[in-house]
Image (cartoon, rainbow, N blue to C red):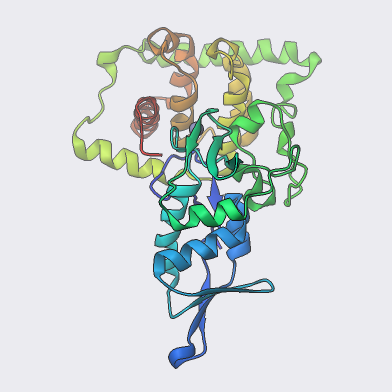
Length: 346
Ligand SMILES: [Zn+2]
């Protein structure tokens, strides 16, 4: 079973917030027909909300009675998974996503006797929930148990038991629940580039890269007018579609992108050297994939991009190696980067 984005409108390749799609089955027949939401507890856990909020929400939205029998979550009537998933989008928009930045890493906090706030871990803003929704009074009567220091306190940390957000990684928080046993908290620690005895190798590699880049000639001069790339609407849309294929499944690219984001969380000046970046690319064996350029297009630069392209020109030129497809991938990554700078839906 593959996971889906918590905010289903979001197609950002770095979107970390995943949940299992709703699985349901109908039981009984005639007037007694019911829909059991088989994995409601897992979905609720991914959203960091009590399962009772979700089942109540379905009841209100679908106009149906609901029951919780031990660990079974039932809605009266026949409702297919798509209908429930669409309804869940409403829950996520109204009761999970931050009202300001639309990040799902939020907590509902009861203030005073009957005021509900949504506290965003990502942007720090506090936004209010809609008091007119029927679920509001249910939550007031059954406030969430937000214990301090509780593990998996946010949507991200709950993902598949081992998920971590880029912000978690950047702030050095590790998560011990990694189900796959793959300790990615060592992301930056595994690189051969970190060994003290590697300086000599680095020098050699730098020389090798520079020598190879020199052979590439003009490509090193990255100037705007040399990006001879199709800028038609169709071509941009096609590149965007290719980007959407770059999802969490592509763990190597994910790991690569997160590593660079982590290293440069304070400033793009802290980025590893191009030699270190290149070594990591070799280590991950992603040098032959255009997606590597998409990642670089999104993580190497900030608002000072005009001055940041040239220092990386050698690395980019080496990776692109006069290949149109790779050049387009970089452009696709840059388009995504510029797109993310603008306000987006979530
Ligand atoms: Zn926020």
